[in-house]
Each structure stands twice: as structure tokens, then as C-alpha cells.
Length: 124
Image (cartoon, rainbow, N blue to C red; front, side, top):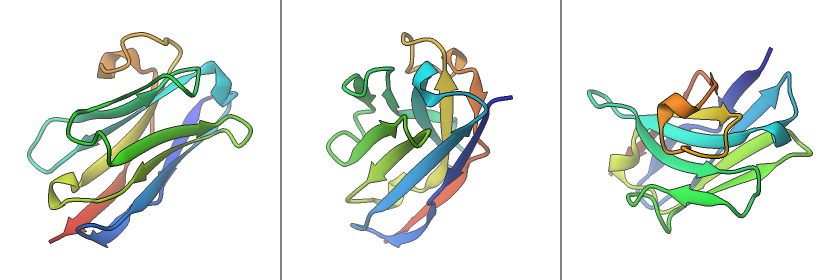
């Protein structure tokens, strides 16, 4: 059974940084493309970033481009989201997700497995 567990969320001041981790168990991470999504209070869940089977294949939402970096360490079975220059509008619950497909990764429906989410709060 595939399980995803996020960690690394917390409270940070605007301009600060956090690194989220997504630990994958039950399967080799190398079999999956990974994505990060977020959901702010009262809003729909939205795409943040994705990384394909190849670590060089990354896509970002315009709102985080240049500030966030997605990466993967297949040896550790963990994916990461490095978040720099955080803004209050980045406040949300962040979810990682895994997909056996390397295409369509901007869409929630592409993903087979989801983590439980981790809260990120950015104060102004």
C-alpha cells in the first residue's frame, strides 16, 4: 500500500523559507511522478509544482515560479518543496501527490495517491 506523509510545514514570517518533505512508503519513488498542491481557506485546491520521473522535468504555477523548487531523492524515497520568499498568500494546506503517469501532471485527477497535508502559515 502506497503512503505519502508530508512534513515541514509551520508558521513563518513573510520573506522566510520552509522546506516541505513528502516521504513515500510502500513503493519505490522512482515509479512515480510527484506533485504539490495547496488549498487555502475558502478556496479550491490548486496546483503548485510537479516533477516527472526525470528530475529535470519540472513545472511550476506562475504564482510560485522563481520562489519554489521541487525536487526528488529516489534513494531516500522522498520528494521536496523548497519555498523561499514566502508571502502571506502562500498560506494554505500543502499536499503532495504521486502519479504513475508522467503526463497531465497539472491536474488533480492524474494523481493516484495523496498525503494528508501539512499547514503552512505565512504572517505579514
